[in-house]
Amino acid sequence: MKKITALLFITVLICFTGCEDKKCDLPSENNTTDTINNTCAIVDINRSTLKTNKDAKKFKLNDIDNKNYTIYFDKKNILIEDISQDFVLLNFFATWCPPCTGQVPYIADLEKKYKDKLFVAGILVNDANKEYHELEAFSAKYHIDYFISNAKQNDTFAVELLKGLSIKENFQLPLTILYKNGKYYAHYEGGVPIEMIEYDITKAMENKE
Image: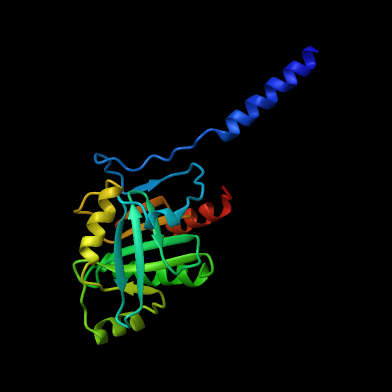
């Protein structure tokens, strides 16, 4: 009888531990670390609820070819309509920023390498509304095949999105944010090594939770 009781106790304990909520801390306002990595498990969320969430914000990103994506977000959660990938990489950059242009070809390589699983979007900040020929030439020079938004509201979108993540408005370019299943996973300020970003992407993809 004692053995049965002990077995039941262990079973209950395992179930309780496995079902415990795992919380990932977002960067605080006082955090000065350039790179924030959440290593705890991130479960999928019902992203469709963002459309009906009264606190969620909505923006439309568009490129020079008038291709557009509607994006919803509420603090750390994000939803981009009409994409099939579970992972999203947002790269806030400017064409006049040397660290940005130095990183762009490697972001383009990541997009090609993980295209089926990773959606990449470049967001021009303090540099929007560029003429068609300017962005066309820029994309050709750096072999960019991923979506680049030059929408008028890019700067406003950046401020509102980063506010929810407690990232200061005077962030360092480039700023790259990784999402998994609609939830914030990590962000990187400045020209960090692309190996660091790819490492986190592969780890996020390996984690099935």
